[in-house]
Figure: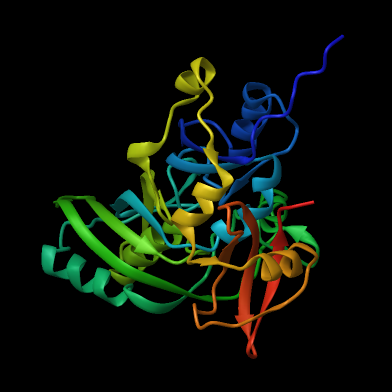
Length: 294
């Protein structure tokens, strides 16, 4: 029996359908790509749709770094109704008339949630508390005390606003890794004294990878389009081209001299254009984060 050759290393930009977990997508892509070496960068809740970056083969080593990049969402929030999950998948826990809320109130509330802020994650989240996932404890009826964490909301632009007994807010949100859009919906409603939750979410960008370039599961079943790992790194991170001597050094896990390309990951490429490694510059040296050769 002839063994199927492994697919090329790279990333697949999936347009995740509603109702699928990120783990569901990874499982499906293992079958489509023909390899067990598949992972994703940055979880999307089942309700959400949009960009899920999937890594194949050696590109799975990129995923932790891609997950830390900036993200953009299209979100719809309902103010006046709270749920135990801060989104539409949870049980309603409170209802307050939002008839007195004005457009100016909403814009002031949004402004207060823009910039560098502290955010408490949802009770039903994957954060670990004393070794247990918060969502598991919450579903067991336990009160979960989650600590506020610093995040950055670079932009929170209201694109549609429907006022009434409940208020529907649609917004484009650009934010740092670790931001919970569900929590922004909750905090916007709580700040206005009426509560709130997320009713729809679509991720439109992860780093440089936009939804316009994402493919549905159905399309990928017809043709599995994999962005080569070298192209994926060139799009996402600063690029450093090195000499043959430097290439040999970094290929064996050695450090290079820093050249001032910043603190984040940097893609290192051989003279022939082959991706060698991701490095980061600290203390005058560029040390490997991941090596892709050998």
